[in-house]
Image (cartoon, rainbow, N blue to C red):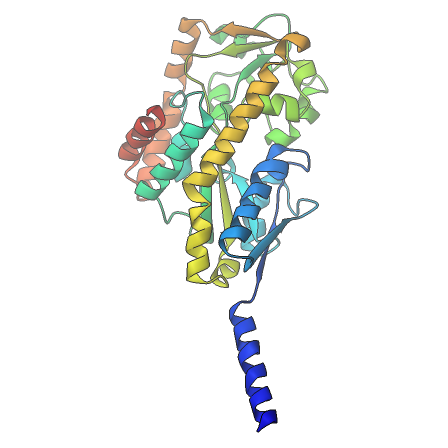
Amino acid sequence: MKLKHLMASLTLVAASSAAQAETRLLVNCFFGSGHQVCTNVVPAWIEDVERVTEGRVTARILPKSVAPPPEQLTAVEKGLADVAIQFNGLIQNRFPGPAVAMQPFVGNYDAAKMSVALWETNRAFFPDEFDTVHLLSQFVISPGRLYSQTDTPINSIEELVSRKIWVLPGPLAEIAKSLRAGVVSTPAVQSNEIISRGVVDGFLGVDADALRSFQLMAYATSETKFAAPIYTTTFSMFVNEDTWATISPEDQAAIMEVSGANLAAAFGTAWDASSAEAEAEYGNEGIEVVDADPAFEAALIEASAFVTEKWLKDASAAGIDAQAALDFYKAQSAE
């Protein structure tokens, strides 16, 4: 009898252990080991995940990115990593929704507020858009800026089109090309390769945080600051569907409580703080901030209208109530 009782106890222990089996998430962070996303925001999220699941779900950041920046979504879909972050401008043809916050001149200079507004817009208008992975959060970083590498600030359409400039891929590159400016476009993490070699004499689309993170300060002489930012960049963070399915519904709900709007706000807040620190270094680096000429800003608003018109059409074709989503995002981010 004692042996039977022992075997029964062992069976119960084994069953209990199986029920409490740990899921370990491998998180890819392409920004680089020293970037705040990899050293601050994602580690804090991992701590929250482990806390709210009582250790049933753990995670670690991979020591090296398993894929280049444009292929973060593909890497998670293929199972090369469980969790990753993707710049939405590179997947806009598949998932137009998050580009609602990437329309020219619709944002502000508060990344935390914009990030929460984007997540709330996602929940209201395109919550199921990412159908090959499970979406954890979406966020907006501090706005992209316009920098000159010469002694002359870029403060007119004529000056802009006379330059050869590095431009972030997506809407900004489309706008610059439509104006017939000379454009070199790569992911932001590769911007230094172009800018440091003197291939261009201006750059558009990185924020002050990226200016420091990607070691671009030495090449900027001035920033042209618009009343409303010309462009804001959005990202999505997601987890592999099969991996997500191994997590209990209760733990999934707990993870989403510390993801979603909360994680969006954390990303935005971190970016705002880092950008403010970088801007404080402008003086030491000899970078002048020049207010945009209202005529220049008005001309860019007019020249960029086609981007929003195209997005409204594409998002509507994807089943999104695009104009309502855009109006909702603007209202939410302005609150």
